Image (cartoon, rainbow, N blue to C red; front, top):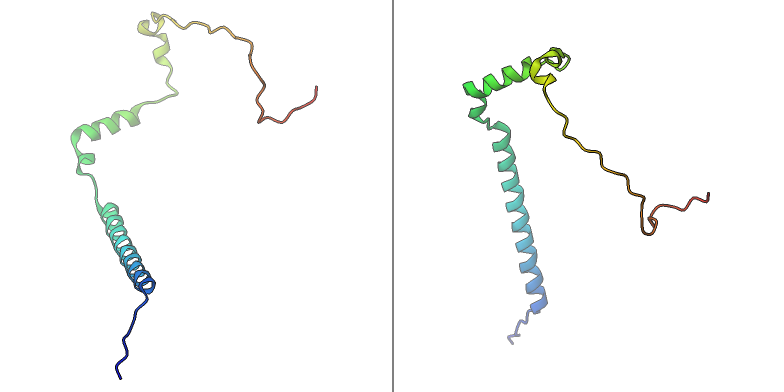
Length: 103
């Protein structure tokens, strides 16, 4: 006597979903390992050009403690165009997220 084998469709869907998850996880893990290895060993060759080297030399030559430029004419001729912003008293309700402190 031959019996008909029946397979529950929920089990088939669960097995396929599990295989997709395992395959996707393996793909993500292997691709993230390859990317990190490439970025760790890759060096941008533009960092060694003459322009970049000159920039770094000029940047390193700046001395922020040197205030001799304050006595130069170009600095003395600068005009201050700033304007004061008037203070406005706060309006509206108090902030409900700040705990109330009794006066």
